[in-house]
Length: 258
Image: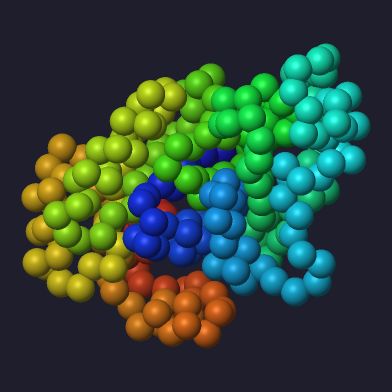
């Protein structure tokens, strides 16, 4: 159902910018109902999508009243009794922000008990991710931290692909190997690579040579507009049609996975 893509990459490679641009490119076709998920503890996807202004976005993990209502337990507590199958199907529409056909959900993080804790917050996040991946006919683009902690094993097996964003350089292989291992550990079967900030054919060759056993879906060029947008605190390419053709080609490749 739909298309479910996780975007990973080590810090500084442009992962969040790429996730936002892919979400916007996919939303050009109104037949694609696109949901962008910010599941990185450093939540920057709203700015990359140009979703700003108004009330600050409260991450789902910090909606204390909602979590208590749906799980039957106060956030921050561990142990005791609470439902492990809370109602979440209304959350994407109630708590998302939308621009240009892309709905944004900010997940937030569980701040106590460790990444594997069984607590109301982690329960609602995992239930929500399961709902988004398994039960909605949407295009879901997930900007993940390296540990992809919100994806449980059963949910991960239904993700269409994990796209690892890499830059040219010798460290690409080490970063990609770490993320691929994490992806495989939780059951993601298809691991892809997308080169970013590529200046020339030599940069492309560096990535190909470093990652010969990966499927590479494209190379996004180094771009002054992205650099300037980052400096000015705005989203790049106000008109997504002006983004490099390589971005749109990568989006088409992802659509072919459906």
